Length: 142
Image 1 (cartoon, rainbow, N blue to C red):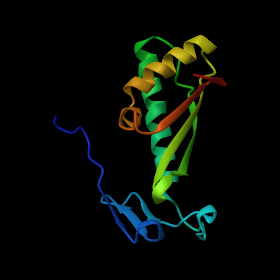
Image 2 (cartoon, rainbow, N blue to C red):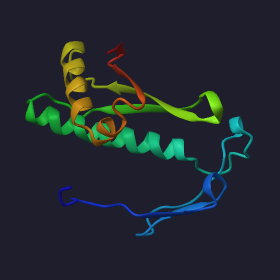
Image 3 (cartoon, one colour):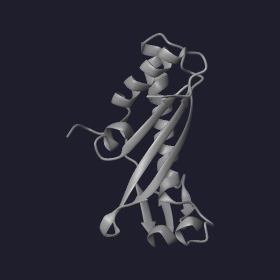
């Protein structure tokens, strides 16, 4: 394994109904089950954190690839949905949808850039062949 550029560290106590904090103190959260899963919803849940992380990483990747390709992608916006899906035997799986807006690009340019970003983004690489990820670029499903 190569040398890490950065390592995030976090501590969670109590799981979905506990607390979570990063070692640098930038995040210190109450974790709660969402109402849809029988919780009170008065906190953050792991799916929300994953949705923000994936969207932020994908947007940054798009911007970097856009610059390399000389395509204006600085106006990118990503809306993400992370779903917790039940499987047989009491197991669960995640599903992701990324809705990407690249207003400065044509539909074809946006589609190409999004496809390339999906090959480069660390979150996309971590989820590939494990989590279904739906990509929508400028309102076109890829």
